Amino acid sequence: MLINAGVTLHLVVCGALMTPSKNANNTHSRKHTYCQLFKTDKLFFFAIGCFCWAGSGQVFYQMMPTFAWHNEVKRTDIVWITSAVGLTDICARLLAALLNHTVAKEHTVFLYASAVFLDALSILTLTLCSSLATFILDGMFFGFAFGMMMGSHGASAFDVFGFQQFPDAIGVGMFAASIGGLSIPLIAGILGDRYGIVWTFRFAAAVAATGSINVFTLAVRKRLTPPPAENSLQSKRNTFRRRQSSTMQML
Image (cartoon, rainbow, N blue to C red; front, side, top):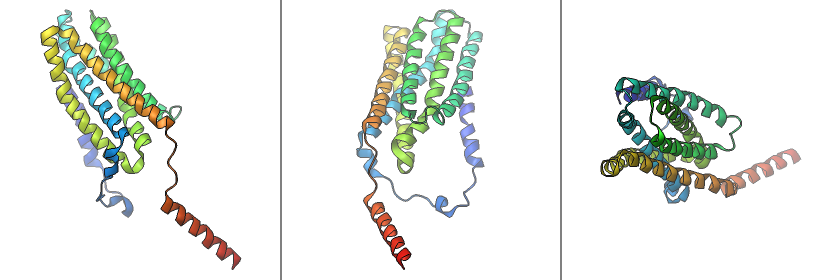
């Protein structure tokens, strides 16, 4: 957990190094929130997806060392499992960034949903591990899925909600992820104490699968929804400019 906290602190450093933009249009603070976003079903699907993958991911990180120790993996060897998770996570995030800007540019939400599904599958297959080698392989599987998911999270949110609604959507999604990270491990731990530690990961896999269903629904919804029509006010402005241009040419 200390290593995870140390890695996360890079966000604080990057935030401190940010300098204000020289463009005056970007430096003023936004004084309004798009409240109509909270009435849409797409925000609900997005938030539930964040809630599920965050909670199930915390279960993996917190309970995997205990499960490995129950399978007679030495405590000193568990570091190899977490290292495998971290290395594949980093590589997968870079790969996700590359895919989201090239071949998967038009399918970012499907890539995000597929990564959440692979995350659920990796947690479920953890229950089949019984040796250090199998734990390392499954850790690499989970790290790859989690990295692809996090690397596609922001791109899919931007693709679904657009530029104006992106900050609000990310804020709601991260709030839901925080609630999931607090509640899901608690419930999974209670199930593990009552029915066995295997049920901890089965429950977490079911939660992650639920999240993937919500994100796939969001992807299908985006595919079937026609692009929004041009704003009427903007259309009137364009018409006025065309008429003004035609008048100037006649003169």
